[in-house]
View 1 (cartoon, rainbow, N blue to C red):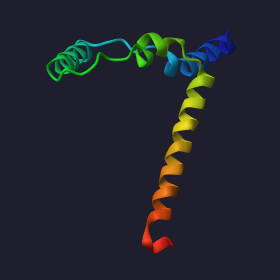
View 2: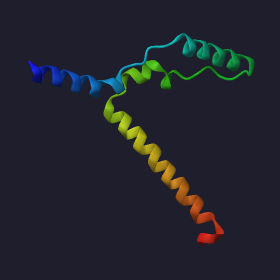
View 3: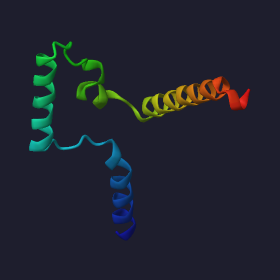
Length: 89
């Protein structure tokens, strides 16, 4: 029985980062304010590609690939900046 409880605890800890967060009143209010600012500034509506619907379908491997792509892009940008500086020529 002890092993089952320990396994359950470990499994919950592993699943926790992937569960959707419960929206608070503060976050809902913030989303409303952002949307009204978009309307006032005449900006296009928020893309649903990055919205909660998309995020709920993202698997762990897709997340890892997206994070790695961002890291690679940042490394290229830093490398390009360092190449362009006079001290490092």
